[in-house]
Image (cartoon, rainbow, N blue to C red; front, side):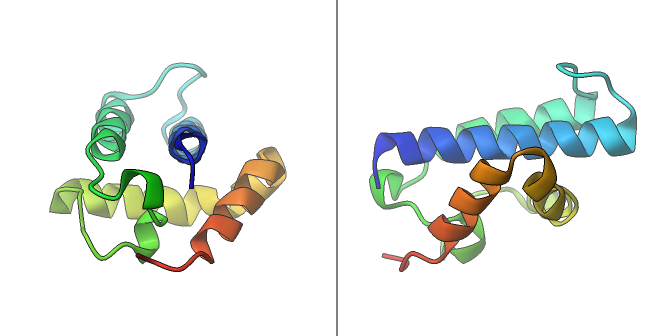
Length: 106
């Protein structure tokens, strides 16, 4: 996995959070509500501090739970909602994310 993998994962998470916020909280892109903005900041911080960096698995397959419990539940909700919808709005990123999830966990 290359550093571009982390950037792609950050971009995928950002788009998922924006999709979730726009559809459920009624925000107009590029704006986010306060809760979703906090979740995006948390996501950026967790990706930057990921102990696996280059060999990072997708968060769903990771043995280390980086997110605080409240944020973990929020990101799960976002992923459950936005994941399937990403196939329509950003199909290449969604497919790349699904392929990344198939890689072995270090």
